[in-house]
Length: 255
Ligand code: DGL
Image (cartoon, rainbow, N blue to C red; front, side):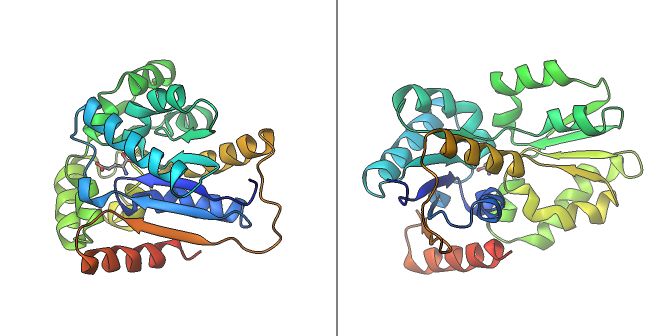
């Protein structure tokens, strides 16, 4: 049981930003990453659509891939489906991510803060609870519609234009930026081109630490002393697209 993989899921390759933190902290674990790029983006889908799709993927990860634990490496899926999945698969550790707004409260509470996330995440009840608890009165919430898509498809020239339009007005003013979608850490350099040297906050490291705690508590930490295996699967239809995704995944996972 201890040497079975930890299953990761995201609507695409964004969740690699979480997986690489887990690999740094828990290098001896085996991992299986499911990238649902056929159904990307999740950010504009209804709660029911996200719940049912995540349910199918989790079932696949547990039954076919024999995963011992699940990480929802997607803020949107976490906001909308984590509760349902934890109730349904109550004997499986399920770790979820949320926008790292609490970190702003802990480390840089006064600064003008932008929370960048999908519309789905920002409109969720889960995020509303987090925001009302840690609101610093100096924050703007930005629903970055279409941004995860541009990153997923590697359209970085278009992304630069998109970010200039979205963020240009905050240049010189923004101090903290919460990367509330797991795709966004893959675009940090692009965001810096517009906003300069801001402080970035993302939940990936916290999720990795939470995964470690949860595996320890359940006595599921790998007993292997060798570096673990990282498997990848993408839901695209054509083999060509699957290969492109796999290649991009490998280039992002290298740490
Ligand atoms: N990576 C995702 C997130 O953290 C989802 C992006 C999307 O599919 O819209 O929210």
